[in-house]
Length: 255
Image 1 (cartoon, rainbow, N blue to C red):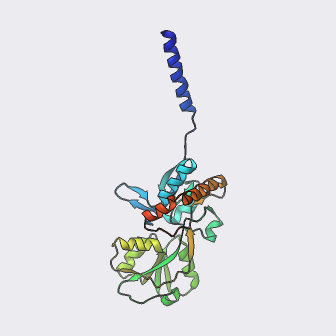
Image 2 (image 1 turned 45 degrees about the vertical axis):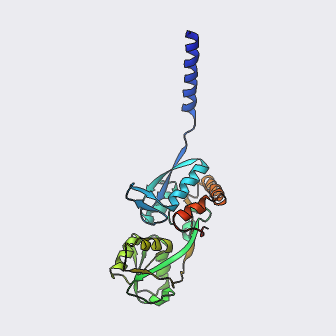
Image 3 (image 1 turned 180 degrees about the vertical axis):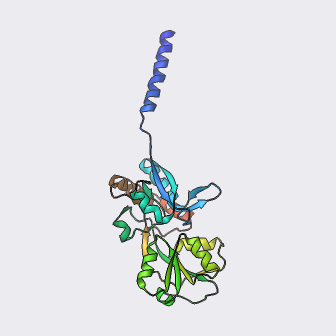
C-alpha cells in the first residue's frame, strides 16, 4: 500500500512539474483610446476600452497565441508609447500614413475611409471641399493625419487642434466652431447616439485624406507583425472580421 501511495504521489509531482514548466502565454500590451467609437471607446458600465479594434486584436491574439492587455491612452501618445516600449501594439482608429510608416510598421489594412466634415445644423450649405470653408476657423483632433493636411492647404484662418472628437463636436454643437473634421465613421457614430443634436454631418463633402486603419507595431518586431498579418488574413477568410465589422455597424467596408 505504501508503494502504491508513493507511485500516486510521484505521479502528482510529475504532473505539477509539467504544469509549472509549461510556457505561459505571452501577454502583449495594446494601446487603445477612450474616444473613437465604434473603433475604440470607454465603456462606462465596465470601465474598460471596447470597440471594433479591441475585438479584432483580441481575436488575432487568440489565433496567433498571445493574450492582450488593453492600455487606455490619448491618441496623440500612441506612437511615442509604442516606440518607447510602454506598449507592444497599437490597435485604434489610426490611419497607416506615410509619415507614421517612417516611425512604425503597420499590418495589412483593416478598414478604409477618409475624413468627415461636421457643421452646425443651422448651416445648411452643401460643402463639397475644404475650399468652401476658405478663411474660416475649423477644428481637427491633435495627432491625426487631418491637422497637418488641413493646415498645409493654407486656406483657413486657423485650424484648431482638439484633444478628442467629442471636444470638436461640443464646440460645433454650441456654435463656437464653424466646422470640424474627423474620422468619418467616428463622427457618424457619435451623431447616431444623439449626443450632439445641433450638429450635422455634411454628406456632400468629399474627403481629401483617404487612408486605411491598420494595427501598429515597432519596426523591430517583424516576427510579431508576421503573426498578426497571418492571423488577420485567416480571420478575413473565415468571416470573423466581417462579423466584427457588422457588430459595430461598418459591414462590407473592410480593407
